Amino acid sequence: MHRRPELIPTTFESFDSRMPSALGDRYLVKLFTGCRWTEGPAYFPAGRYLIFSDIPNDRILRYDELTGHTSVFQSPIGHHNGHSADRQGRLLSCEHGNRRVSRIEADGSTTVLADSYQGKRLNSPNDLVEKTDGSIWFTDPAYGIDSDYEGYAADSEIGACHVYRVVPGEQPVIVADDFDRPNGLAFSLDETKLYISDTGRNHMRVFDVDGDKLTGGEVFAECTNGCFDGFRLDGKGRIWTSAGDGVHVYHADGTLLGKLPVPEVVSNLTFGGPRRHDLFITATTSLYQFRMNVTGAPYPR
Ligand code: MG
Image (tube, rainbow, N blue to C red; front, side, top):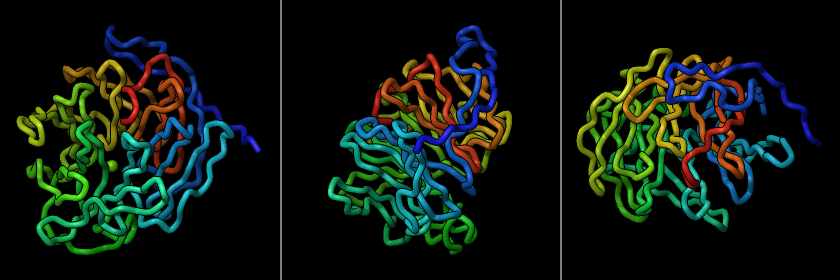
């Protein structure tokens, strides 16, 4: 049964001539609601569905864009947070509850990619992205062990919140150790830059990528409303990021180009649809869609 979604009027606010003001729809489509805190959208073009997390309710959901129906994909699952689709179409997951990074294989089994660093358990992996060399880069703040709301309260064994790189089958290595709460992350289209948000410091930083190492790390942007959580790049290298009042769009030079107001605090987003021009937004209790004349970076992202 196709469920008629709620339409919420909104208009993209452009602050810079490099960003068109008319980006597409003049409304958000509220695809699903009734969650406690949504995050982790990952779009699977081969199946035309989107996976996302409802962390406090310990479930991941699956939105089918052909039927418009959203259903529970797995619950309980281990308080998943961030997700990504890898280059073989597998689901990569950050698990608060099990304090690990994992992958669901083609046969449905789960492979643990990282759960400790030098014998100490990770805090609660938050978000991850795959590089074209097959390595997986992830952040490990403490939100999932701070309390029993988004995971299970516990002391940090590592005692700090770092950014890691892991090659499947090997041990993770630290690539950045000067964050308060590292959170969202995304590579530039040519993978020479890595953007990482720090929700503890309310800003986003940009690093130069040299193979498996990072250098630089200056502040790229300060969030003007709320904080940057997850984000993705469009096909022109612009950064579309979550914020307290909606989605903020930045040029690669750090200029805030515009905003898309959303009626709930935004946590994460990703581009989807067969033409990559649907912006899927996880915002507090709901999943929204905004169709545009802007396309996301090529899959997978
Ligand atoms: Mg996050």
